[in-house]
Amino acid sequence: EFNHAVQASDDWGIYDTAVFYEMSASFAEAFAYPESVSQGLQDDWVPYLDHFQAWPESSVFGSAWSKNGEDTDYANWYAYGASLYLHYLHQRYFPSDLSFIARVWLANRNHPDEDRPDYIDALRSVLLSDRGITFEETITGFMQWRWFLGKYDDGAHFARGADWDYPVAHAVIDPRAMPITIGVSSMMFGANYFRLENLTDSAISLAIDLISDESDITWDISTAEGSQVVSSFTVSEQSSTILIVTVMPTEQVYS
Image (cartoon, rainbow, N blue to C red; front, side):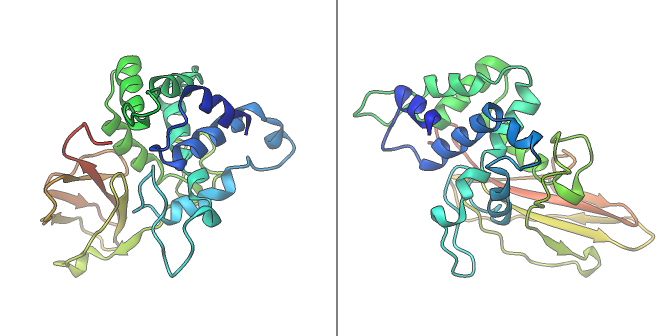
């Protein structure tokens, strides 16, 4: 709550989504109260990764879509689990500089009757000026990192990935069943995850043909390991490949 007061000193705009207020306040709390970890307790935000990881097709910066009739407002705490994105930025790009989030809030300032710059503008500005990366690059990278939680932790991503046992929801596909048509639907900055399991003793080569009728979005396809998928890829024998399909805007002015 103290961090909310600090946010208000920069920008308390009615146009900004509540998710950004909650995700950045929860991020700050995790470092202000490390004793919650030393006493054997989880950080206040960690249990809410359950909700965040269950709805990957929802926007990182928006409320979760309803699933099975469940309430997706504060009742499911999606916004708090979304602070995982800020932990990603901290660990990958700002490991010794927690104040990056303060600079984002400072860049978010605008006049009371204006809605720009907003928090996405601010993130874009700080990431580009401080680290020379685009906001969109961090979305793609984050979608890859969020796969490696719990039993899928590989020791090369989140420092506490093995402790955060909340794998992202995904569909399992047998590539031997190809061709197959799958409908995907996500919010902007949301993603669909597919685990292609090849249980045979031979590599299987596959091609992707993506058809979309939306002119203002683009579908970013990558593997969890970081490879961009343009049209074809291979699933090695006795292994699996994680495909991530993320919705991105066609224009960087997206707000």
